[in-house]
Amino acid sequence: MHWIDWTIIATYLTWIVWDGLRMTKRAHNIEGYFLASRSIPWWAVGLSVMATQLSAITMIGTTGQGYVFGMSLLQYYYALPIAMILVSLTFVPFFHNARVFTAYEYLERRFDGKTRSLTALLFLLSRGMSTGVVISAPAVVLSVMLGVDVTTTCLLIGLPTALYTMFGGVQAVTWTDVKQMFLIVFGLVAAVIVLIMGLPDSVGIGEALTIAGATGRLQTMDFRVDPTITYTFWSGTLGALFLFVSYFGTDQSQVQRFLTARSVDEARTSLLMSAYWKIPLQGLVLIIGVFMFLFYIFTPPPMLFNPVHDRQIRQSARAGDYLALEQRFSDAIEARRKAAEAAAAMDRGGDAVARSLSEAAFLGADERVKQVRAQAVELVREVSGDRTYNDVNYVFPTFVMTHLPVGLIGLLMAAIFAAAMSTISAELASLSTATVIDFYRRFGHGQSADDRKLLIVSRLSTGAWAVFASVVAVFAAEMGSLIEVVNRFGSFFYGSILGVFLLAIGWPRANGTGASVGLFAGMATVGYVATTTSIGFLWHNLIGAVAVFVVGVIVSAITGGRPVPASGAR
Amino acid sequence: VKGMSRAYVRVLIVWVVTLTALYVFQRAFS
Image (cartoon, rainbow over all chains, first blue to last red; front, side):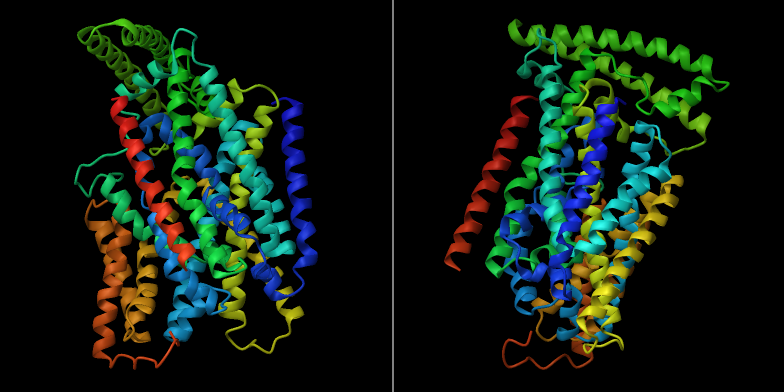
């Protein structure tokens, strides 16, 4: 990489730490540190919500998904606007008016101490682990792209974030999120422009999109009713609705964002910002993948997008097989390019029969490219011994490194860092808040502890979580499959935690015993469904929430319920 | 409260328009 690009990355990292540390003076008490004294304007909260949700995995993984599978992943986000309205109507006024620091604090007022501790503990476990993954996934890819070892990239992502979050608190998290969000969107738009300009003059955007459409990559709605297909219109609108209500309404990393708003209505307005912009933004990320597919039809792609494996095989005993495959790959790519040009020409002037014939020829040529690439991937799996190997996450970074001009490469790499850091900072702050408020202050070191002492403990707790997440990150980077395990681990209780909150808000006679028993029943049900059926993971959220709610209602009734409070004590 | 109700209705309208546009986009290029 050119020194100019390195300078841009270094400037970004230095500037963001400086910018975050400037906020330290505003975090002089515990409310300032964890909730920014509830003083953040709605638009900054809204951008922070979006920046927290958009991680580096979105930038490198989702663009790769768009390249391989097209737009179908977009369906995952269709329920988000509805979820935002539901969260605005229910959780936002409850938490804001209760003047709580954490979502779990509210559960003690409504149920009892054990329900609060249990949900807070589940949050700490899953979020602590997943923060490690949010560091390690981009760290692995960046280490290959930048040619430095993975521990270094873990530290490059984790250390600056830990620094400004530890000292600047939520003020720093929010205001750096805002700037990081602008950098991310700028990077994505720049990538789309370069990709469109990279198409040959003889092929217009409309014709190019027709080619992508022929491969099924522009399918944005799949109406098949089959719970085993992961992304359909139904799983995206129903299953994901429960996931998003759970994430935005009960996950401290998001709840903390809207608790910093000045009023209930400003908090609601900040959430509605995502309701408007999330689907278009995710569409932009996925269309980058589709345009990369089109770009690489007319510009020969590498056979493998991960250069480390490419080198590894060339030096192995199977180098001969690899070279032969490469020759076949290059022939298949050339044949596909010609077929695509013919299809584009027919799209401009041919009749219906000629159009469908040329389209079929293109699809056949594309299929041959896919077959050769599948063989190459299989070869990597044999040589490296890694049965789960695939290079989806390397498509976008490889495109950036090889086809963007100097300067823009540095900016896009900085944008990937920004996407990772904006998520990690919010997660570290939320982990520290739950640790201090739901455990440290709750047990023994009570309400009487003075603010200065709590502030020191909070900063130390943020630092400790950063160390924990970095250790998980380094381990996860070495064992690729750990990432998958952590993701599945989280999905086991997302719906169940939502069930507890639904019980709290929606069933006045529910009691603490019902909520705790329901929580275990929900997790057990999801565990059973996940291990014994092939029902897609988005449905697990709905199943978990319903199981907790039903069991919670029954157990509450059996154990005597709870007298309905006279007014407003819910 | 009235202001927020209007905001929710606006979100719903934009949501329906977005999904319809995506459906039309899919049909146009498939």
